[in-house]
Every structure is written in structure tokens, then in C-alpha cells.
Image (cartoon, rainbow, N blue to C red):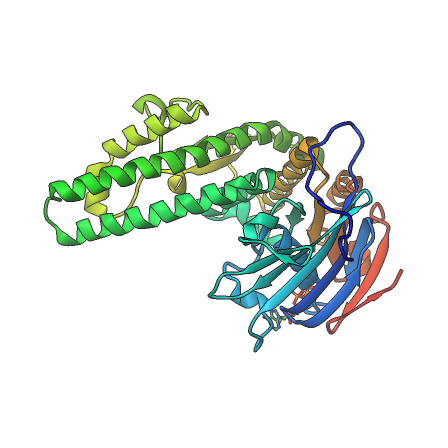
Length: 399
Ligand SMILES: Nc1ncnc2c1ncn2[C@@H]1O[C@H](COP(=O)(O)OP(=O)(O)OP(=O)(O)O)[C@@H](O)[C@H]1O
Ligand SMILES: [Mg+2]
């Protein structure tokens, strides 16, 4: 793939027809267990089948990584690099219609990653975000329902970034401001005396930075939750027709100070509301030495019927709800632009027959679906297509 037909840019959906976007080629170097691997891929369904620990998830994780620049199962990049190797490289040829783009990411743990588009370095890795969009379903998704609020915030922020790559910048601005503001609060708390005028003036400056970056992120999340709400309900209903779901975004910034006031998504009002909430909690923040207000403290509540899903839902209900969040993400992205590539890592084994075939029917129309399973019987018959055997790091086409 030379990516000779350029420039290649993602496109918004223009009509009812699906845009055929797919990964046509994957190449790995020192990624996870693979010293090197090369794999041509077709549109439609590809199933990767093989015993445990043979490298199936590693393959699809690489595709998810090059799309999102994060892994669904590692918090840092170090585990992605083959043990003993200095860096990993993931390269994907992405095709839409008759155009193609070659994207490449070099994973350098502890240092900045590097990216290339059509063999030319780009100034920042985030510039290749959006060329390939994926939605990945995996057993780890159970944490979306059962895990800490941070899991659900990450779900929202990652989806925001897939929808609009500029949110990568918004998120990193917010994280930077938060870190510096926390450092300032920590040092104020450590001194255990009333902060001086200079400290308070500095804090004012950080408040306004935090309010501005935070309002952007908060506004994006609120809009996203509003768009997801009906789609999650619909997905849950088709997977598990028992009980209704509800998504409630509870912000640490509240409208008008009454705790439950609806927040508008207007960025100016969100800046003002965040500043007001920061002023209210300043004393507590100075005492505790951390930022108590902002999107990093918010929670996306998931409810099933009248009860919170977390702590109440059964295992099967939690799993169906987690899948519904991913299905909703898929529906949202495909309604707004190119079909995302769907990755289903080991998800069918956990489901009963009804849910298994329902999920298969819902994902089958996607332009490209990559499935992993330990045994062929775990790939539903609705998802027929190419099949690969994965054994000991070798990937061979079986069908
Ligand atoms: N950084 C790394 N360096 C070397 N080997 C690694 C690295 N990270 C993971 N591995 C190995 O990769 C192997 C395959 O992992 P992978 O998760 O892809 O298996 P799998 O085929 O999906 O198995 P399962 O069916 O159990 O999900 C594991 O044995 C693991 O030890
Ligand atoms: Mg696996």
C-alpha cells in the first residue's frame, strides 16, 4: 500500500449509502507477542480463532490502538511493546472507496509516540486520529457498568474524541490545567496556613483556565450523553427486552447552585457555572489540596429500571448494558459519518443463544467486523466471512 491516491481525509456521511471504510492491511513490529506480522484484510467479517494466549486479542488490540492511540486493556503503553524490544510499530492501510491511507504509529514507552501518514511524519500523533474509527467490544467493558466512575468518564471522552478528534486537544489541555492546579492546591494545603494574596491570585488564574477547558469537555459530554441516551435504550431493548435503561450525567458543576439544576450546553454558561462552583468549593479545596469541581469529578449514572446498574444489576444484565453502550456508540458514529470498524474481542462466549444472535445481527451490517474467539463455535453463524487460525503468533487464513 503506497497510499498513492491522496489526500485522504475522513468524510461526513452525505447520503443513505454506507461508505466502505476498512483496514486492508495490518503490519506489526514488536507489538505485544508479535516480533513481526503482516496481514491483508478484507471488508466484511474476519474471525480470528485459536486457543487461549495465542495472540488473537493482540492483533485486534493493535487495530484499536492505531485508531484511538490507547489500548482497551493497558493503562500505559509499556505492555504493548514486545518484551525486550525498545519500541513497537503498528501500521495500517485504510481504504475507503478507491482511496487509501497508510497510517503508522511508533509506540515509545516513556517518550513521545510518533506517527506517520503515508510515510511522512506528522507533527503530533493525534493528527492521524479520525482516519480510522473503531468501536471495540471486549470483556473489559464490564467495567463500564461495574467499575469506578473513571471508567464511564473514559468511555465518554474516548467516544467524544472518535466523533471529533479535536477533543484529544481539549482533554490534554484539561489534564494539564488540572495537574498544575492540583499541585498548587497541594502546596497550599501542605503549608497549613491561610494562603496569601499572591497564592489566591494565582489560584484565580487557574480557576479560569480550569473553567474554560472544563466547560468545553463538560459541554461535549452533555451533548454526547443526550445523543446516546435513546440509542442505549434501543440497543438494550433489542439485546435484553427486560427493563429500561437510563443514562444520567451528574456533574460536580451544577446549574444555579441547587444541586440538580439542568446544565445548558452553552459554553459561556458552563464557564460561568464552573467558576461559581469553584468559588463555592474553594475553602474545601484549599483544605484538602485537590480540585473538587470539574469534569474529572463527574459521574455518568447508569440505571436499569429504578435501580442503579452498578451494585445491583446481575452479571448478564451488566454485560448486556455494557454491550449496549458500545452498540450505541456504533450507531451514533455510523449515523454521523463513515461506518466505524467493529472489533468484537471474545464477546460471544459470555452470551446466551438469544443475545448472541441478536448482537450478531446488529453488528453484521458494518463494513468491517473483526471477531476473536477461542473456538469456532463461539463465532455466530450470522457472522460468516473470512476465518484465520491464530496459533503461537502465526496467523493463517483458514477460509
Ligand atoms: N509485551 C509483551 N511481550 C511479549 N509477550 C506478550 C506481551 N504482551 C502480551 N504478551 C503475550 O501475548 C500472548 C497472547 O495474548 P493475547 O491476549 O493476544 O491472547 P489471546 O489469543 O487473545 O488469548 P485468549 O483466548 O485467552 O483471550 C500472551 O501469552 C501474553 O503473555
Ligand atoms: Mg483474547
